[in-house]
Image (cartoon, rainbow, N blue to C red; front, top):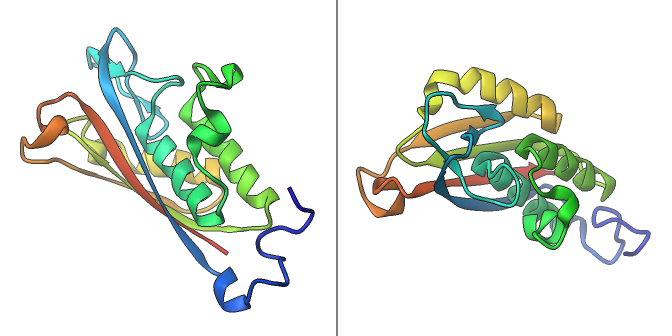
Length: 171
């Protein structure tokens, strides 16, 4: 990697450098016998969690992908993939903290992250403030979290798993 960060590259016109937005998506199938971690929080009372290499927190993972996308630094798999055993079982907030560190080390500041989780449960509104406070502290910038259902359509409607879609702004 060059010593110049993306924000410092003199060959890149200023109009193309700042600010930058990114999109991130993450999807995991429900898995019996696992704890349900969403938006950095453990959700009690569910008989299923999400299947994945780490805790499978779709909100944290989508936020990581959005940050990496905005900064032009690849994706979740490039940094924390299954070929990296040290991240096996890691908490989504640990991955998100490391993603924020990587983005800042590349010369960017984080403006905000917005994430929407799509699925039948958990009901995000019940713990929205708690999730947003935790994720904002983790990222060091505002993070908003919302939820949506699919009116029974698609794999989330069939209660097969969850998806999260995120956007991020870096400058």
